[in-house]
Image 1 (cartoon, rainbow, N blue to C red):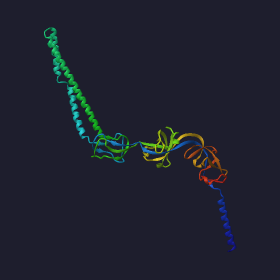
Image 2 (image 1 turned 60 degrees about the horizontal axis):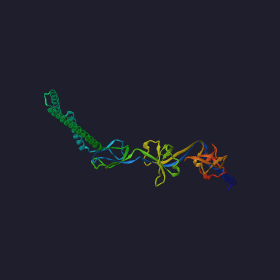
Image 3 (image 1 turned 135 degrees about the vertical axis):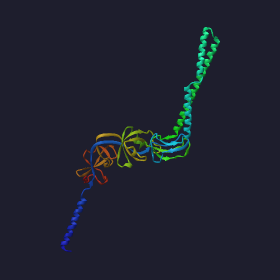
Image 4 (image 1 turned 180 degrees about the vertical axis):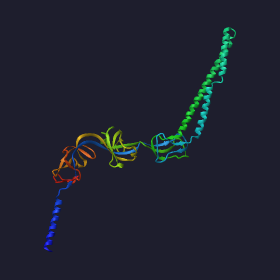
Length: 368
């Protein structure tokens, strides 16, 4: 090998060695976050699930044949909307017959008694006989007979009036009952709901009380499940933040609406109900997620990312070296933790790969 080539090779190896030494000897890079001041929040976690307020069976009160139905699986119904019509032909015929009888009874009552003219005549004869008896030209015994005749006619007409009024009242009651029976042939949805099963079709003959469809109410219930140690501090009115797996990292404000007093027998976990500020159509039954119920807050607190904690310590970068600091922890959420002692605002704490750094070691801060 020529001397010039050898010198070039030696120079190349020297350069490679210098580069390797420079690279291997440089301190590692650490991802850091500054200790900041902000609002510290004390929360407890609850697993969240969404379900329909209730599942109900739509039933008809009358037996009969289904004449028409607007029910369809997956369709939606409104509270009070008539969704099934039973055949009411016979009931309508009876309604018309009773209506005719009622109208006739009203006309008979308005016309009055057929004995009314006879009563007028009897009263006139009684009064005339009384005047004649006072003048001594008519026997008093005959006057008394005429008075009894008038009394009998008055009593008969009063009883006739009572009978006609009673007959009319009975017909009106029967009409109301018949109208109620007809109303029962129209089956209405009891609440806003979605149809999940249709159990009777037009033409089907169904007994009274038979289920016609299964409905899933439109109202939704959001429930949070809490461990026993976290349950006691939760109360109605406390604020919360809810996330659903189906909606990624999107957060929804919520309020504790109810606290159920007993634990689930199988899991020994307690249940709270949450009023979540979310569009109702997004609350799909079966959604699951997590809720952070806020138990307390402190302003102007020192905060670090929760991932910066090593138990009761953090790794602080100061003058290019790592310091392990013991800290006192306060309130905490999933993302942040309050430190009440051990650090100062503005100091940098390592937030990733904490096990890769040792106290006293040199370190470089990652550029944002």
